[in-house]
Length: 180
Image 1: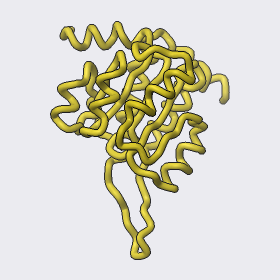
Image 2: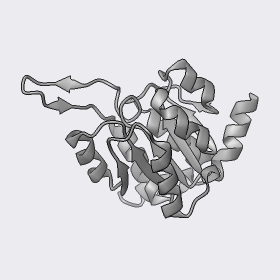
Image 3: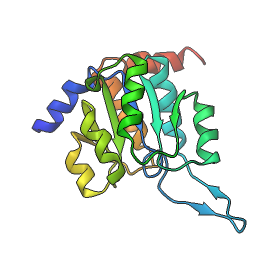
Image 4: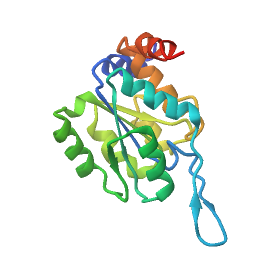
C-alpha cells in the first residue's frame, strides 16, 4: 500500500463530515443550457444513494458550490443535506463555519474536489480527496483519488471508502436490506 493510501485509510477512520463540491464532483461539470437560458445538470443516482447511506450511519454531508443553481438546490433538498452553501468561490470561510457549527475539527472532515477553487478547503481538512478527472494540481493535493470521474459515481466511491475505513459499510448496507 502506498504511503498516501495508508495515510488516507488512517485519516478516514476519524471522518465525521464529507464536504462536496458540485460542478465536476456531484455532476460531470457539463452545463446543459436551453434556448431560454435555463440550466440543467446531470447527477448520478449512485451518488445520491451513497449520500443517503452515509447519513443513515452518521456520516454528515455538506455541499459548498461556486455556483447557485435551482437544479442543484432541488437535488440537495431531495437528498436532505442541510449544510448547502451555493455561490461561494472562497470556500474556506464557509467550511470553517460549518465545522464550528457542527463542533468538529478540520481533522474530522474530508473534502472531495476537482478544480482550483477546491484547493483551499482541501488544504484545511484532514482527508483531501479528488475525483479521477480533477485538475492535476488537485490530485496532487489529494491523499485519495477516486477511480471514477465526477458525476459518474465518484461520490459513492468516496463514501464507500470512508464507510469501509470507519467500519460503517456493513451497517449502511444492512439498513437498506432492512427496508425491503
